Amino acid sequence: MSASALRVLVAEDEPFNLRRLSRLLREAGCEVVAELEDGPSVLAWLARGEPVDALFLDIQMPGLTGLDLAAELAHEIPVVFVTAYAEHAVRAFEQAATDYLLKPVTAERLAATLQRLRSPAHRDPARPAGPFRVPVKAGEGLVLVDLGKITHFSFEDGAVWAFLGEPLRTTWKTLAEAEQALGDRVVRGHRHLLIRPEAVVGLRASESGRLLVRLSGNVELEVSRGAAPAFKARLGLA
Image 1 (cartoon, rainbow, N blue to C red):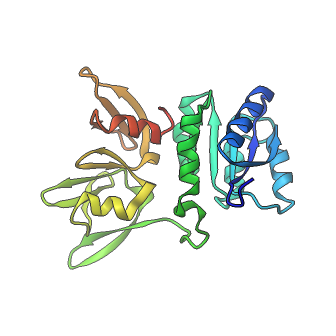
Image 2: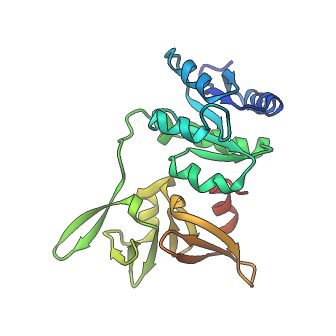
């Protein structure tokens, strides 16, 4: 076992799925430190204080669901939700999940999740806590707006605009600059559009076959064909 191997806990109430996911994780170079079948067992294991780098939690488990567990942990440990139900994707990201896997989990999709877990953003304990705030212009000064209130960002008229029902002009000059600052807190919709995944409440195909994304506040935006695969993968729907 590599000294840098991710130590992961797997919780799943279906024995076959538990064994399969654990096998895939070990084959990908992870150390599976615990295989558990319900939420209370996860809390009991964590109470022992043993080190763990990530939790792979089935959303539907007896005792406590994966979502309940994540709320209890208050984002102290990166969480990856695993479920057969795509409709749980939005709630998963509301819980600030690192990623979301649909059953049956594939080795390729799992590899992308593990890459995200190994990234500095998730392994660096000094990453600032608390909500990310976006600087927007207000008269001669600036106002800091909680990112959680923003649905999307658009580049228009030579500026990047944040949308909270109404557009507010940010201090960013280009969408690439905004994307660099926001990192994985947003996902590309097209060359002039960034969307906050947690704001997504629905998806559908347009008559032309393009992906239409409905956001909170009854906003519907079109995602380009080129951006659609990565967009759906970010929501765990690939």
